[in-house]
Length: 146
Image (tube, rainbow, N blue to C red; front, side, top):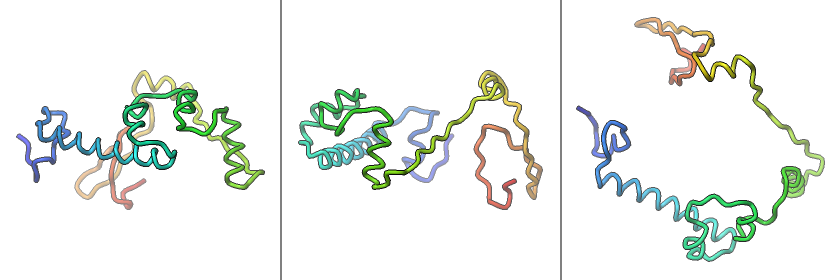
């Protein structure tokens, strides 16, 4: 049994099928977002919205060449070209590009295949001690954060 405060409160629950009314509601939200997005693209790119809707604005992935042909991008190039353009547009010709990379260690690589060996953290709650597990999200008041 499910207890809820409104008829749509559990509409995306994985424990049951959506009702036709819920499906229509979610589809309406999707279409609102889609309409807003296509409208913004049409205005910004000075393209006919109906042409977009009947053409490339159907959810497909476009190659750079196809996006250029559809007038959705101004030019094609490599990442270095994008850096140069960003410096130009930002009027900062000497701006430095900083690249942050996540490194992969053997421990991280092997943890993909099995249980993580990360240290466990325990928090003393007023009613009991709680062990926080690695890889899970916890919403706690700031004074409980380690």
